[in-house]
Image 1: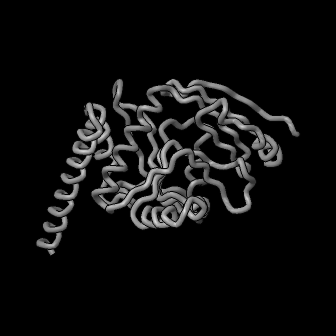
Image 2: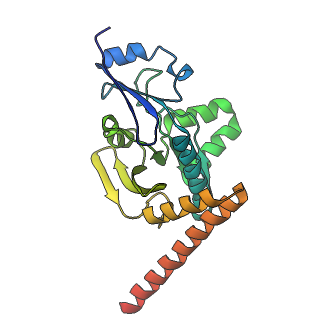
Image 3: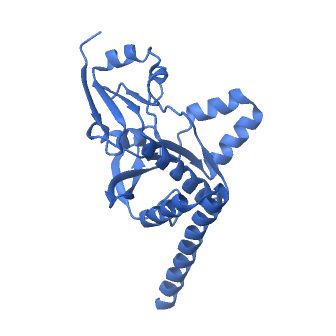
Length: 247
């Protein structure tokens, strides 16, 4: 095993993050260790030669739940189907078992969600095969470090269509969200409107997050997010009508 370069720091949300840099062979060897016994979030990427081990803070985990509520409610309204993927580790074809990217949140939306549901209806083996072979439509990264900047490109190479990235704060509890369109053959591209959840904007997500945080029950959270989505739909219809009338 070759020498590794290890750093540790505290993320902007208070999570403890260990980053190990090594060659691909060493990363594969280290993948034999059951890292999840000690860390909640693990990324072993032999392509970039990076292992990231995170012990998420409560604010980090809380935001993950907020994004779960937002995507579940929004996906239900806009596409009629959404499936959250829990404890998912994404890896490319031929990459060793135990390696892979582990996003904070990952979702099938629309057709891929229906495909996942149909596969699991055939049995667990078919469902797991579907998850193994089909990348999620959307991944969310709550807390990125400098070492993680290449994650978006890797997700695109693995077939993910879109990434939402929390990349800053506005005041004490307000944050900014960036939408990135992903493609296996191109660099990540910042977009103003979601492709996966058509019409949704980063500002809509921030508004929905504030609403979810104020909610006391799951039902209130769903109703709050649905209200944001419905307002966006009405605004989009008005814009299309105005454009049609102008032309």
